[in-house]
Image 1 (cartoon, rainbow, N blue to C red):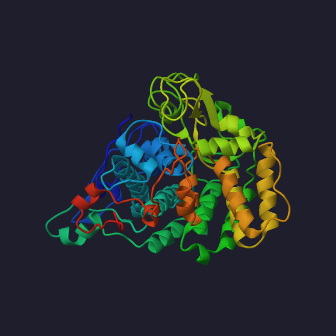
Image 2: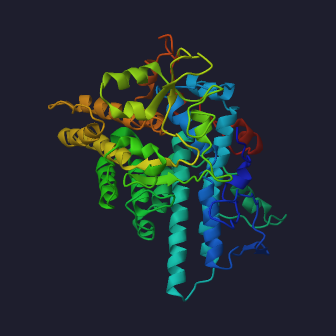
Length: 496
């Protein structure tokens, strides 16, 4: 598997700095302190706005790591009822069996890469803040745009962090050169305690406030760039997730979803197009990772999930994320659902772990090494809006949205007169089939207090319970033991 540098907590908490000569072509290089310091006073690392853009490019590059080429699927799909683990590896199998431990290497790497993503964004934000004011309005506008994009990236990273770990360290500062005189001041910043989840959510919303969003570019097609539509979409997810379900403001969820719609995104007519090279930057996509297949710009997830040969299904070793029998049956029950063939392909493989080797299902939404990975799209936002409408008692409006998605899938509409409870389950089921292998299912179940019920009913390949005893503490991941070992202020999540 592709290896990435594992950063310590120090490097991860806002101390990352790197430059890119070409857009998104350089891997980040860690830097623990700012060399541009005099007497402990921070000075911007940037001489020009182009320096800021270069580091922003590096921050975007941090998305293209294990996080969204494997870990997101292990957490979002394998840990749910969507997939068996598929491939080999004790650490990966723990997600399937819901036995993840603090020493799990995937969790440790995910923690480090999320904090690298957040820290790189903080570096951009703070270094721009430290730059002298410029009298040129065009330069000031560029600084505002770059800062807004960096705040989107930081908000994205911390949203995943708080969803996965709850209370978690949050550092929003740069650190000067450390001396004997300033060590006591900066030690708690270098090795932070856990910030309460509600404070992390408050910072996410601050990073996504209206003024920040106004500085972002606008688009009605998917880009590998923060846009106003992407920011509204992320804000919708935050409002749909933060706090207890009973206390959430679902009107704000609806408002944010409608702000995304107002940007002009549209569902593509052919669902399958989304998973093709021609489907890059479609009218349905909102935020997607860009891959070209050249040099180090290939989509590593292609080999992890599907095939040895680009563009052909040829399998010589166990692929990850095998669709569960329950998921396959749910697709088949829909009869003419076009999403089935677009999401799962059946092939002959040299192993029979979960199905006969002669006819084995593989996840099929990433089909080429140069294919992009869509992280946010309109169908997700529409179904999130439907979820919120159900909670607001507007069941008929929610059903209309679901039926729009089902019409594209070529399946019958939902029946009239559904109760609120029936509509809740209908939206949940529709999100499962529509967003299979997009890293959403686990977060859907946890967000709606459905994890224990659904995972208790999940079956293995022989029809036995997949997890013998589903415990509520599993809603959160363990803090990596390696991080606790180097940070005495860091505590573990309960029952781990």
